[in-house]
Image 1 (cartoon, one colour):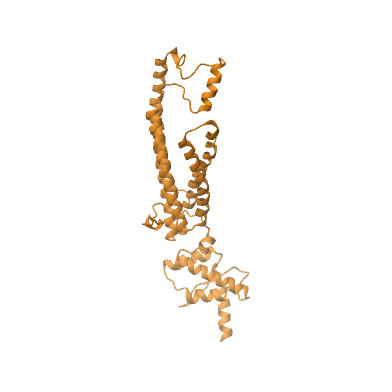
Image 2: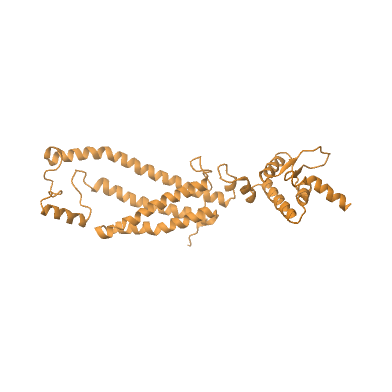
Length: 311
């Protein structure tokens, strides 16, 4: 059985990031946070020299490997391609599951294995060697022996104080882990929603999508935007041939069949690319004329002149 990213394609749940940002920008922020987290794995390689467990080496190596994956994912999000964006969401979810397993192991070890009795913990053989050197010189006592440590000079008092501190801190630590896990779930939903909007071609129509009017004309998402794009191309072609406005006027008069709200949408789209509506008395059956300003002349007059010369 072959696995495919097409087998799991959730729909768009979110239309923005936190309700205030474009969802694409939010996905870039999500990946940048992940990238910073992966960079920390590079510094973790110092455990090779100071000593560490095999699981530590494995985790830091995984962080370095996924560092390049996150750099690739950032470029994919910026390219606005639907299928690769869905793959990015899948990989980010997989990374979250792997990190959740690692965090669960940390939780079990730190909550139930580590003794929170105030004793010094030796984390590596290099640290133990430094302690042994200091003890041999008489600079300190062995922290693992338990002698002379804690308030009151007794092991019992030290243990009581340490357990009291841990009782208050573990609640905060547990909430931090839970909130961090839920935030990652929101990040996953943002990535899947962005991929779904790209797949359904609704991304550029979102309210908070940071697109200018000219960009909306370049990427039409409605019939009115499509008509405005065609009109813009026709006018540019006519202007390059020394016939400004003739093709655009014919398009408005003959091809742009619209009424009611659709007409208002096209008017707004035309105004967005610099056209201005020509106000003049209209006869029955006539359409609105548009021009590019006083310097280029009225499109309606140019169209009428062309019709008279042909007759």
